[in-house]
Image 1 (tube, one colour):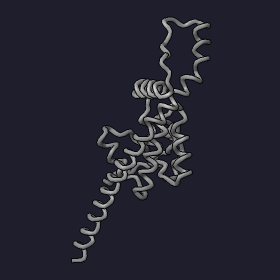
Image 2: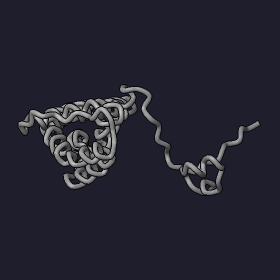
Image 3: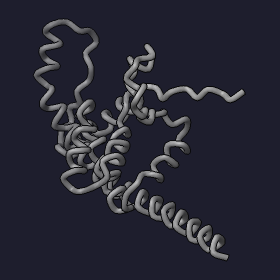
Image 4: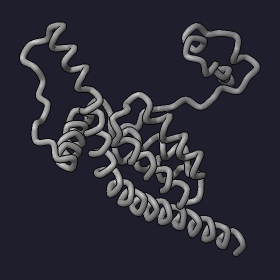
Length: 193
């Protein structure tokens, strides 16, 4: 007895959970799956469509923007600059994740300390032992100073990271695309003979 084929599911999360009728006559969009490992993420990165220069430039822009203290807006900033410089938007958005909730405390501490050292500030802001309204107000008054130090440190650390990321990603994507082209040529050659 032939097995019944399930109709494509709607790509909307709510609709997929409630078996809606949207997906009945539409093709379902591909679902995003989180990479299971770093190797899986690296392989997905290599498979991004585009010229290696565009992919590498997008990756470098994403790394640079990822070093800024604007978490929550970094992906928008990276995609904006990728559009402006005609770079790959997907690789820019992916590279921003160098700063994520797990790495942010370490990354932002390093960028702040670097910025403070470069700007010549020897007094480093430390968190208060207790929090009340006057302490909170004092912290808010120091925000521009802290943000400035983090931006300076992010730029200083982000530039060499972006340059290294550009060359690494350019080499990796070029090598992968060349291997794929060679495999296709061999397969085509075998088909002819």
